[in-house]
Image 1: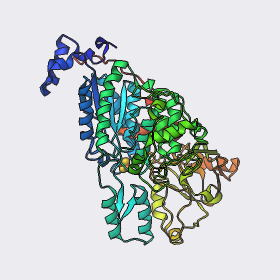
Image 2 (image 1 turned 45 degrees about the horizontal axis):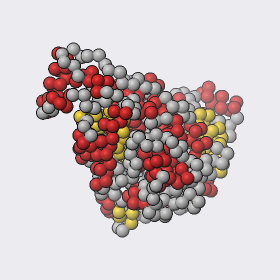
Image 3 (image 1 turned 45 degrees about the vertical axis):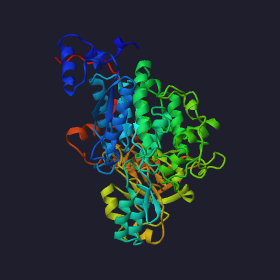
Image 4 (image 1 turned 135 degrees about the vertical axis):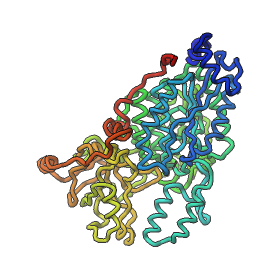
Length: 574
Ligand code: FES
């Protein structure tokens, strides 16, 4: 591509009234005339926010990207987009993922940009930015913010999310005091960065690397390690080259890249949330991907990393052991990697990882002696989930993987919270807890409430896991025998809406089956009597979301956002 063909020259290359406008107002920051001479203009898309603690160090990362862009002769311009803080946003950050993706897409298209660097960290910021960038389809490189340092409490490693869940259960069971609980809070989040377990943020940072959108080692370098800043600087240098090479995002996000990502998801024991995010990204960029691809491609893949929530180590340990390049190399050596898949640095993924060295075989286990065998996502179907449901076998209890139990049904999350610790609740450890109306439309936003708390009276008996079924999602830091993403959801009239307490349900993970023991006639009569839940919103974004959101098997995107428009130059504004 020559300088004349750069998209930004439609703004800055004009020698007329409009060219005056476009250059002059930017000169208020002291940019000299030569910045507008046809060098690539690089947008640094920043999700920094004090309301999103996981991304609160992003101004520093953006500075290092800026140095890199300048090193390579580009013109960096940083811009903010909506940030999505997982722990601070209510009712759930997922409600706003699609809104943020619209912000990203339109900001990229509206401005004089030739390439984009995406700064992503907390869970939903990663898919939101990649979805938006995919629909705009400029040269794009992803830089993750990096995980926090290990959490430490009284000499023990504690992991974000995972130990919050286990310690809150211990508090409810009276096994620890409130003072101990508060002390652990301070030890868990002791540095900048996102959750340091293999939760959704670390999973999605790994997906960025496996998809080829980020540079090698993007996934695991801790946020406060100087090498994170070095990676940001190298990304800044590289995006300028990508503009010159016209290496747009759709040349990287190809079918082979998604297949690599799905197998990587199994090999890292990653979050179930990645399923909906990868489906949504694929549908934006125009790659055919289905829920069944996750089951098919994940078969034979073992979990190689001993990281929380499935294991005991944390992302800092993963980085010191060699990080994701080691996992990718091990997948490649077993035929589970499309070795020629393209990546942002211009090399194939195999060229990037074939020399990767493992420095700790306990943290990253060999394929022949894996941390957990057969760890891909299992996609369940049956009369309770005609369009599919997801379970993460590596986080489940082996003895519950084939089980028939009596349903204990909660119509919504409020009823569940009200009833779950009531000792009069008719439930025992063999029962199956069912939660309705927590899907994309029902919550709305498909909250991470699928891993319902174990009833108090069962906790006291030592029960720590039960089968739980819902149309909700689950935090990537959570664990248990939890069936998620049931589609269609209850609020959309899926069979989940028809389940009643006392019904028998069979979960058979090996057979990939989820069956409600009610015959078709019985289900039909229940459906005739079914009344949809009342609308949760009458106006604004939430109404638009509920009216247009797609089901979990289609990525929970808004129907009118699927696909891409590219980045045609908009009309002048004067
Ligand atoms: Fe932000 Fe976990 S809360 S990554």
